[in-house]
Every structure is written in structure tokens, then in C-alpha cells.
Image 1 (cartoon, rainbow, N blue to C red):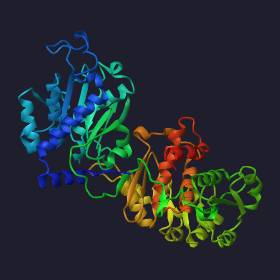
Image 2 (image 1 turned 45 degrees about the vertical axis):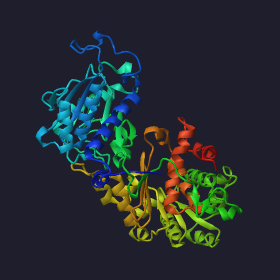
Image 3 (image 1 turned 90 degrees about the vertical axis):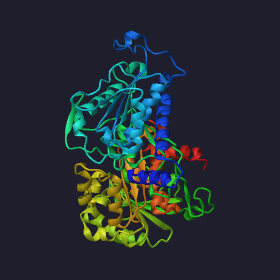
Image 4 (image 1 turned 120 degrees about the vertical axis):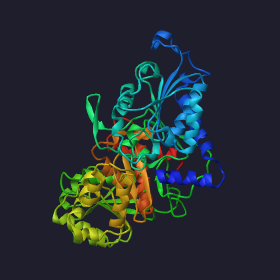
Length: 552
């Protein structure tokens, strides 16, 4: 797990380091600027002054006195992010680049450290005014640096919509082509901390208007090919639009001590443990490794539950039983071997089955239906006090039944996608869907935390930027973005397998929060291991390979 920061937390960490005498603000700004330049040269070594091919011939560029030099445009804002930009401009100029610097705002109102670096740059080159009326020219440049706002933005940037549009066009047109393919018209874009216009706490665009780019309409914000951030990754870089438009994230150490826990984490890797040791090296028989019961729908409606059952068994539950109506026994028996079967026709039959103390975990919802009988199954499961995963149809039933909702307890895990979340927590979903016109904007992290507090249990809010929270406010993000992007997870049955993974981990002895975090991480890891062409049935079968890679 890697901890993430909000903008306020990052400011507090920097302020504490400065107040302690550990470092000055000017030194932090210098380290940040040097980190950005190093990241640029690492990402595009052909731009570095000491290696790579020679600059392009003169006819490659506009005719001017700087023919043949690498060229950059640096856009500086009115705060310390702009100060970082002035450092980058100075260092690129010292490396032999031709650099054009544009300032948004009044130089007289710059913060003290940013003002120092503004003046240092002033001894080397001009500073032009940045405005919509005369946006800078990006074509025939090698690089655009967005140092406008970073994590400090609290308002929309509609007054720079044409500048932001041009930045977006560079990124959109650049695509995945090589630098030689992109130049001279579409230079790569580097953002310092965040592409301007995106809230660092939510990943949402702060917008009060839209503009047109490449034939479509979008809110006014920039995008980047590379985003360089400092000390720790930011929450908004892993959520919503931020996870899409930051491009690639490069984390730079600026030499300040890590803070205390912030209770928001990003699942880069999980430790598969329960209790005092590894859940996968514990001795015992199958029932000491947990027994999960998963309910299925009737004839022709058992596929989702079978996927969940297979996931629960593969992830480590010692025994898994699929409960189904008597008429569906033959259908399920024809497709299951290691998964046991049990006739469960009514809530009374479920209660009788749960008299077996070896059954320690339930999964209700996948393919179960939303009938009155299904509602009774959910009620019986909640009354049992077992650890329980509630997914799919069970969430729909709870969302429309206040007495059922009131029965949720701290051993439950809810796994809604966006539509199910809106049915469970309509007011929270409405708040999340409202336009973000002021920062920090209400985020998916905020929404999931609020939902977990209200429900009194763990909530896993699914999506490419899955967020998991418990009632205490503990929160983590399992985002399938950047190097963990796995778009082929958007396939029928994928969510049923995830429910099965969580169920199996709960049966194995994981606490609800850890089971949800670990299940979500393994879900993405299996998809990455398999690759494109994935279907839901492949996910459980990829687990052994993933476990071997983890040394289990």
C-alpha cells in the first residue's frame, strides 16, 4: 500500500518541514524544479543535453535566431507552482534550450519564493503575459510545461479555456506516437503536480463552462503526457478525470520526512495475511480454512453465482457450497465439481443450512433475483451475523427496503457499481454527480466514506478507480490506471468474480476491510496477468500464477 495525500496535507507537510528548520521554501522549490527537469530527460532522453541525437536541422523549426535549439514553453501560475515553473525554465535555459515563459497573473503578487525565482529568470529572458486573447504558440516546440496551478487550484479556469484547449490538443494529437512522430506540431506536455483545471483532491474538473477541442465539448482543464509530483502521490491523480489526464505519473523525492498516516492508500501491492501470519501457509483441514455459502438463482440464472463460487474457492476458501433451488441442482451439478451443492428453496431452508457452524461466510446477490423470496434470503443472511458479501441483486433489494438497510452490520461488505451506489445512497450519489465548481471538490473518496459511515460497514465502490472505505474513515483506492490499467476487466461477470474473491478471503479469516482491499487488488492483478481477451471465467484460473509471483 502507498499512502496518498490531499492538497491540504501536502501544504501542511511542507509548512512543518520549513517551520522545523529542516529546509527552506526556496530550497524545496529548487528541488522540485530540478526533479521536474530530471524527469523530463529520463522520459525523453533525446531531449537531454548530454546524450541522444542532435537537434533537428534548421528547416525543422520556424525561422529565427534560435534555429536548431530545443525549444520549450513554460506556463507559470500566480502561486508556488508557478515558482516551480520558473526554476524549470531557468534550468532548461542553462541546458542550452530556447525557453519562452508566460505568467498568468500579477508578478507583484507572487509569493516570496516564487518571486525570487521569477526575478532569477528575469535575468535570463522575458516573461510574457498569459491570456486567452493571445495564447502561446505550441507548434514547433519540443516541450510544454504546465506550472499554472498544480495542487493549489480552488476555482474554474474558464478564462484560460483557449490555452487549455491547445494543451489538450497537444496531448490528444500526440497519442502514443514517438517523439519524432509528434514533433514539430504536437510537443509533449509536462504538468507539475496536476494538469491545470483538475482538483488535486478529487480528480474532477473544476468547471463553470465547456470549450470545444477536436470536435467535442469538454470542461476547461489541461491534460498531460507526464505529471511530475512531489513527496507522495495525490488523491486526485488516482480518481476520475485525474487518473485519465495525468498521463504518466513520476514521483520525485524532495527530501522531507514522511508524515503520520493519512488513512488514504493506493493499492500497489497487498500483503495476503490474516491474523498473525500468512493465510496461505497455515496448517489445518478444509473447514479450518473457511466454508463459504453462495446463493444462486433458479434455472438459467446460476452463472453469476458459479463465477463467484469459483473465485471464492480459488482465492483460498477451504470449502465452498452453492445453494440453489432444487430445480437448478442438475444444471449447477453439470458445471461444478469442487464446489459443493445444497438445496435451498426458502429463507427457512437457508436458516437451517446456517445451523452448520462451519459455514462462516455468505455471498448473496449474484443472479439471485429481486423477488420477495430473495428479500427474505437477505434478511436471513443478515440475521445470521455471519460475515457477508452483498452484491448485485442484494444491493438493489437493500436500496429499496429501509428495514433491510437498517440490519447491515460491521461484518458486511457492500460492492456496488455506480448505479447500485445511487440506489443505496441516492443523496450521496447526487452530491457526487453535481458540477464541481469549487475546490476541493466532493470526491469518490468522500462519497464512499460517507456511505460506509451511514451503512455501518465496508463499502467497495467499483469502477476503474475503485474506492474502499470502512465506517471509521479508513479508505483505500484500487485504481486500474497508469501501469495497472486493465480495460478488459469491463466484461460480463467480472464483478461476480470480485464478489467471490472477497467472500473467499473473508472465509479464510481476513477482516472485511482487508478482504475487500486484497480482493480488489487481486482482481486487477489477475487481469493484468492474463491480458487482453480476458473473460470472467479466466480470472479465478489466473490466481495460481499471481500467487506464485507473490511467493505464496
